[in-house]
Length: 137
Figure (cartoon, one colour):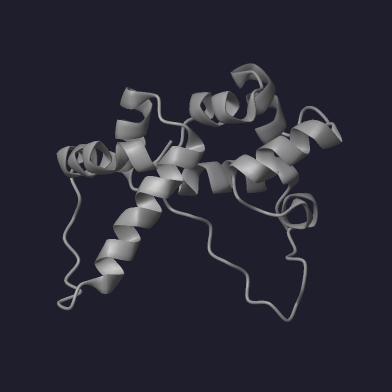
């Protein structure tokens, strides 16, 4: 069974984020996050909640590695493509704006009749952002 720090690190990496990015989004220091991921410190409820919210996961999962209900199928952590993550860092996009851009892209792909998935480049993400930025605020 994995530890709290390992679960946080796993979720962070699945999003393609650096420790810097998660620390910034959760409003904690990078060194504190490193200590958390290496199980060297305990977390306050406030910081644990910040991290859970930013990682879009439950406190139950972070604390125990379990999902709230055994009847529910656990949702897969959100995976932010590397190119989108890089663009988000370049433009200093918030976590919320980055997720909104990803959701908009996924909605557009789901509505396509050909449903052929094309790989999005950083420039493609930038173009989509430019077209949608007034709606992402």
